[in-house]
Amino acid sequence: MNLEKKELIVKRAYKEVYKCEDHIIKVFNETHPKSDVLNEALNTARVEETGLDIPAVQEVAQIDGKWALVIEYKKGKTLEEMMTSDEANLEKYMEQFVDLQLEMHAQKAPLLNKLKDKLTRQINSLKELDATARYELLTRLESMPKHNKVCHGDFNPSNVIIGEDGKATIVDWAHATQGNASADAAMTYLLFALKDQKKADLYINLFCKKSDTARQYINQWLPIVAAAQLTKNNELEKDFLMKWINVFDYQ
Image 1 (cartoon, one colour):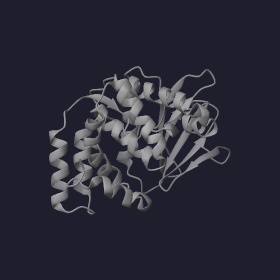
Image 2 (cartoon, rainbow, N blue to C red):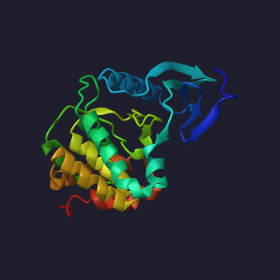
Image 3 (tube, helix red, strand yellow):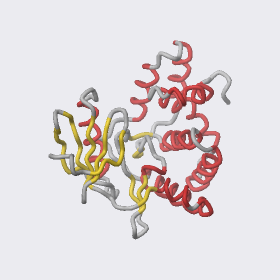
Image 4 (tube, helix red, strand yellow):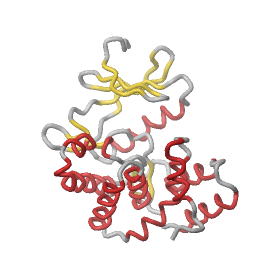
């Protein structure tokens, strides 16, 4: 497969994403674990089987010795682009965003990995926290209700494509699991808050209203998902996340 004539649309530390007419190609660095690439393909296929209209995995390949995923291309604009360019209609876009998340949470994919198991591994791997802090987080996680709803794990407006017909589709299922929808909502709130507290507040108020979920309940997940986000080792986020992780003072 020749990438020279393909359009590079995303470049990250661990991958490059190229656009073609009817598909995109994610090419991962040589150091990126093969198991992570195969897991993303498997996650996406399992979410496809729920009936959600998402970009389908078409091929797992090797390109110049690097693992790659070929995924169906969905034409349109991201919801993030629309929120930014048309701020007057922010609330309308946020309602669409929350409705899409609730539609996802209504699905079941029993073969997906469990969110609780993933969070446990992430908390145990954190070297920034001492054993006491990790214990408190794991105790809180163990006490939370266990559900089996489809959770995206990185649900933010840049991962929602709005087609020319107005139809929305969710992309990038690398972090998909089955678990508690409020944990997924807490992560989305955190991702908003890292960039724009106003949007974070609008999001969480709409999510709680539409899902009939108490804000206090989602707040209980915030130290846990902040610890999970800390494992991504983004120095720019570290101070912000550590404030949420302080489980001793957080109410």
